[in-house]
Image 1 (cartoon, one colour):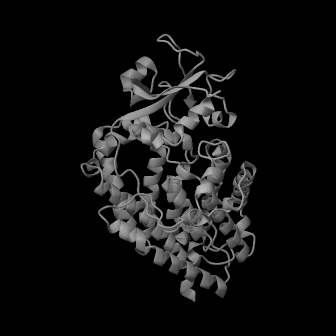
Image 2 (tube, helix red, strand yellow):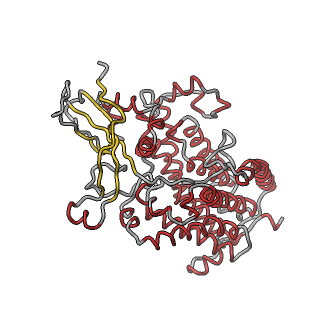
Image 3 (cartoon, helix red, strand yellow):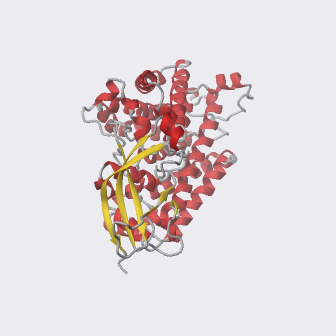
Length: 475
């Protein structure tokens, strides 16, 4: 079965697998650092409460067998250690069956976290990581040549990510069709980065070029990705360059980095190795029969499950970032079908005065990533994912997004809960909890060059109204 393997893609697989393991590592690290406040037994949306009302068939997870904060921490930190081992080459240093088992364990552990993560894990890049991780189980290791079918499944995944995003834009907001969306996007995106202010102030003709280039990368390059070499490598290069542009312009967790990693499956490894002066691929043995059967079975499964995302791509009512099964396999993707024109930020404030008056001083809680202090330049966090900060952006769009968790968040702040405070940049009440906490809505916009020179502020903000009136501790 010479058609089964492609030794020329050895370097592509090596880089793809190590980089994918690095993304896994980030995902598990985020879970380990944030779960107590968000999902723990005293979290904003506790896992035990979710498990009590959700059967296993709707959310397959090892936590249905047992849950405790200590066990969740063991799962998350275990994932960090195992991911780091794969980055260091552990999966290439063991037999093929053991390598597949390592990748399968990583997938099962992260699936268990996502399936109890509720709204905190309702992001497209969670499903993307799980789908990519499932395919990686069947990519083999250094002892076998990369299977052609799995490399094509990786291309099919990148195609759905990019083409789905392109179609959702064409079918969505009119500004994508008249090339004006980037007049607003750099300013109103969920979590701007340190260069977003500068991207926003590019000349408007360049914004139109950005938008047009995005359409090429998401609607043309994915089609070329499915053609023979060297065209497929060129298309992968276009996708990678576009994703790097997005990395520079904002914070989108690991979405951009994972898309870059997956695009490597379409890069001709032998040509890349020759171009970069890398050594030739080592001798690789023929794939054993049982591995060939496993790859064919996985390919058949993906082919069957592809019916739903293909139907979604062809639908006028295209869904964005949806899974059609509880294992998050063969999903549909897409982002920013509509663009927010105005940026509204939720600002949480507290006071130690038990009876507030018009003269009461309210002190602001500072978040790590989301805009707060107008004089603070946005920071770069991606591929690390600040889950609470992202949900605060959604709350600024509509209070309904915050309904399940905002009041519990305020309750934790009223008691200076250590796990919750670790999600924040600073606590204005380090000595004792505040007497009252409230949430206000502000309109934010980037300053212009003159305002920046005069005030040193990157943002201008003005109050819009009250999102949550002052709340007092229940004690």
